[in-house]
Amino acid sequence: MKYTDNSESISPENQEIPLEIKEKLELYGLMVQESSDVIWIMDFNLRTTYMSPSVKKHLGYTVEEYAQLPLADRIPQESFELSQEIFKSEILPIVSGEQEYDGKPIIYEMLHKHKNGELVWGEISFSFIRDKSGKIISIMGITRNIDARKRAEQELERSREQYRMLVENTNDWIWETDLDNKFTYCNPAAEIILGYPLHQIIGSGFFEYSIEATRQSEILRFEQFKNSAFPFAGLRHILTDANQRIIHLDVNGSPIFDSKGNLSGYHGMSRDVSNYQLLLKKLTKLESRQSGLLSQPDFGVIELDSNFEVLEWSVGATRIFGYSRGEAMVGKIFKSLWEPKAWLSFYKQLENNILPVPRPFIIDEKCNRRNDSNEIHCNWYINPLLEDDCLKSIGIYVKDVSEIKGYSEALNLFQMFAQSFCGALIFTDSRLRINGFSSASIDYFSAQLTMHKGTHIRNLFHKESAKVVLDLGVNYASRMQIWQGQVDIKFNTIEKSASLEITSLLNKNGKSKGFAFLFDKISRT
Image 1 (spheres, rainbow, N blue to C red):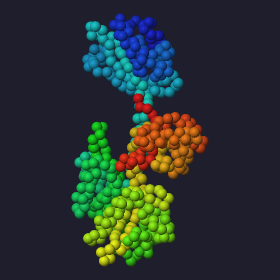
Image 2 (spheres, rainbow, N blue to C red):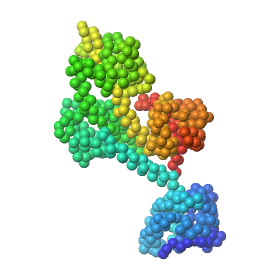
Image 3 (cartoon, rainbow, N blue to C red):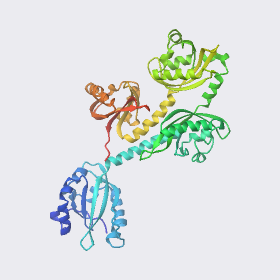
Image 4 (cartoon, one colour):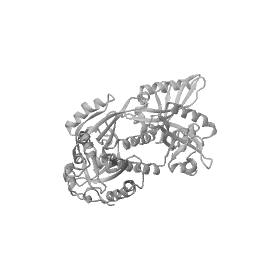
């Protein structure tokens, strides 16, 4: 049995339809008229005896127009071949009585030709109609438009491939664990860092390679984050590689939740900072080489008196914080390097590490400030010095680790983009300066977008739309609500209308740290 082109009208008046089917059609008439799915009936020669008017919504044809189309003009060749295969393997055995029909609908996906020439994805679900005696007399099906979903799935697949290339070619160790802290995924960098084959690392424990001296403290700190399902950054992980070399890793991680919202593991990034750690240890023993350290641009060397006035300010400190040596030593600028809450935390830790015996300590602070008011993320090595039981001075080594923090955030932003499916996704800080965007945004706004990082978001819009976005959209989103509207884009030579959605981005404390601007978000079917 083969497909047969139907060049006759498929309205019920022109076909010999059994009375039972006509009665059912009348009962479901209203439902069919209002349904967004295409409902159809075929005889055993695969001639269409009925089709609902919703075919126009899906394919642009009226029922009469579609009836006149040869089969080759309805579906592309690959869909025709798929349909023939489905007919031979699924339909024919049931109709001929060779196979018992279990009552479950037969479902498959295929492309259809739209009147405008485009190809449209449809999900076809069909079953069989029986007469009163139980004999199968017709095939009834429903075709649902799934084009938007399929396009979104294809876009997601492309995004996953881009993400895979990023992960597999970075020097940082990208990993994922289950609830038992066993590695379920590691990128090739894990082999380079540990020296073990990847298949041996997968399935091993997160702390299996830790040195004995720090293993329990590392596990305890990690479990504290895990018990609260919190993300973490700057977790120090000390381990030995296959050659028994000591490795220091700076670890950032985020929780993974299952479909029910339960914690199912963690994923994150570990960066080899062994050289940095070795340098910090040497710094505590080499005070005689202070002059050499002061010219080191990779980290800052600062010395304070008991009133927190700067006694020494290195080249690296100038590079990190933007204050010249003269500005730092004349003005009382040290407190201005910290947000108020961060300063109180630093001061408390300093007090706790002075008495009864002064001891150095490390601070991982995300809320430091440069001279230009930009927020940076720093690691601090603090060494208080006492004289006659009184604080005499404070020796400080500081390193800007904002790049590590930024990389971790970039991974999270990429997970967000892969789930958003929009034409463009732009991120800003709390002052509406562009600090990130999805790769698709470059195609949406042109390559010139890469030159506008750090500029104000208003530069993407017509003047009138910019006013609406700033006065209404951002103000609304800042109250932790999603703002939606239509805007006019004007960026270099790009001018077009777009739908816009603005969402506030929150830090782990629930406070706004910026905004996400989603242009032409795709609705899922």
